[in-house]
Length: 275
Image 1: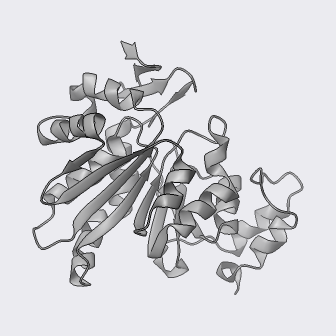
Image 2 (image 1 turned 45 degrees about the vertical axis):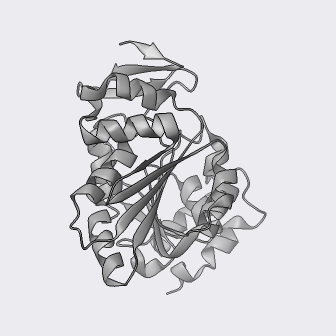
Image 3 (image 1 turned 60 degrees about the horizontal axis):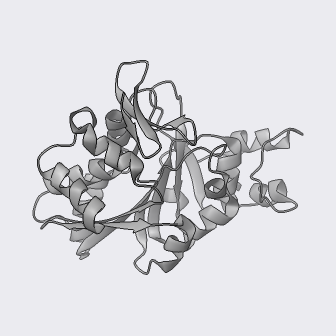
C-alpha cells in the first residue's frame, strides 16, 4: 500500500493493517495488529481505567502516562479512548508521547479507517501533528519530539504508567540499555508501572539493573509472554523469581550492551530474588 516519509502500510498474516518503517525494516505491532495489541498489551494490562479512578479517589487531579515510541499512535489512542470513556469523577489523563519521526502517524492518519482513527480521535491526531498538543475535558495529550532520553530528563511530573514501545533492540539499541531504563526510572513515580512487548533476558536484566522490579507480562498473539516492570515489586502480578534467575548462570546468557562488570551477581542480590 502507499507509503510516505519512510513508512508504508502493510498487512499482517491476519490481514490487519500495520505500519512498516522502510529505514528500520520493522513492522509496528505485527501479528495481532496495532489496535488489538495497543488495547490488550498496554491499555488493559496497565489497568488504566481503574487507575484513573483510584487516582481521583486518592485526591489526584491527573494521572501521567508516558508513551515512549508514539509510532502510528495506536498505544496513545488506546489510552486516550480509555480516558475519554472514563466517568467525570475519574482523574484526567496527562498523556505524553515521545517520538523522533512523525511519518508513521501521518501515514496512519492517511489510512484512518484501517487504524481506528475517526471522529474525535481524528481531531486529536490532527492537533498533535499540527501543534504537538490536544486538550479535552478528560485528557491532555502532548508530544515531545526528538531524543527520548533527553526529553525524559526534562519531565518534572512523575509518570504513573509507561508504555515502552520503540523499535526493537536490533533497530534501536540505545533505548533498550541500562542507561535508557535508568532515565525512565528517574522519571517514574512511587507506584509507576512499565509495560513493553519484549520478553528478552537482556531487556529484563537492563530493567533490573536500572532499579525496576521486573515481572512477566501478558502474552499476546504468538508471544507467550511480554514484560511488566514496576517501582514496587508488590505492584507486579507475576514477578520474576529465582527459577528465572537460574538462567543467568549460563555462559551464553544475553546481557544489555552497557551491563557493568558483575551484572549477574548484582541482579542475583536484588531484593526481588531474596527468599
